[in-house]
Length: 485
Image (cartoon, rainbow, N blue to C red):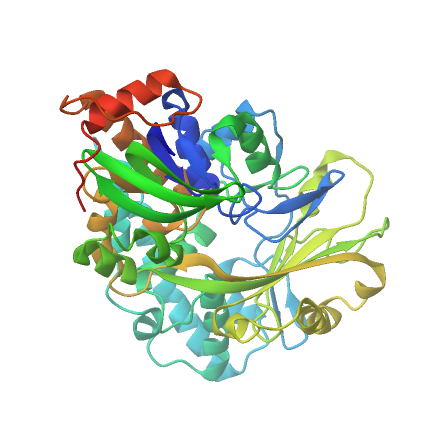
């Protein structure tokens, strides 16, 4: 049986669900291959805290995601702790301004000089990037994305830095690993984005009381009638004036015909179901998208007394077995609530993370905890819960030449299939993923409002939930025997 909708959305991460929310009056159908919504936002609540293995930084209230947080009655807390800390060769340099790090880190004279010279260069590109990020009059978000992707978009960060002393190279490699890439894999502009946001004096982010997963959970409940879990898209093809999406779910295989589709899954997951729809140019654009791994362990502890990590939010760890250390309990420090223990997250990114793929959870945990012991030896005796997740495709990064794919990705396919997700944007965050979803939803709504040619009445098909939507789709498709692509 074939059902008919105005729009089908593939993927129920933050991008897919934002698109569904924008288009809910059109009775969208969201297909999600896993048994949960949220994609790479994933946490499990533990009182006011949560163990988390996914995205956790929330933008300000006046953002797209921030407005949804408010609408669903959720609470995000400013992060009061120190965000720029570096652990290197047994020393923890805390709460430093970026420009002072060359003088505070345990480096040799030559290493210090090399690190400082490179720091001046990255400060310059960070400042330039943030200036370019300010929208100009009458610009769309797509215009801003293209400009930012083009900035330093053809040169690798390694080539930009030039030769470095090994001590300086170790630190800059760790900074690139934080963004899931190696220095020779990521573009100068992508690292300019990271440094620009680090140096920016504005709002750096918030954590959600109870865990980041509360937002996709709330969206999932709100949009439950539109979402099908454990339902994997198997084929997307053009069909007359619309598209047909084949899928496999708990009740077997099926098809849905729609006037438009929004594809909101990571780029590495496109090929299995989009081979019939991709043009050579689109396939070449997708080939430019690079994803990297994060091997994540979330650590819950039970202490009620003060600990040395309480006033710290994040630590860069160039010479440990993980790339970053986060303290997700830090946001509760200013609330006056009694201490409930801590929830900490560590992850290993890029090639060092890739080397852990295929390891068991226990092997990964022991690898991570060995480095935790070096950083905070008192932590291990308080551990009550561990959760490890090896994300092979944790997120995208901008490789040299990535910007050349942008125009194709922004236009989608055939004026009926639109892309959404952080990999369609210039910077990896919840907010950029949501913005691409809003843009895709705007395109779909414009398409549907323009309508399509009214050809002979469609053949009868099984239709679920919204008869009016079925009528709109039938009139748009025309004769179902007419197929394209």
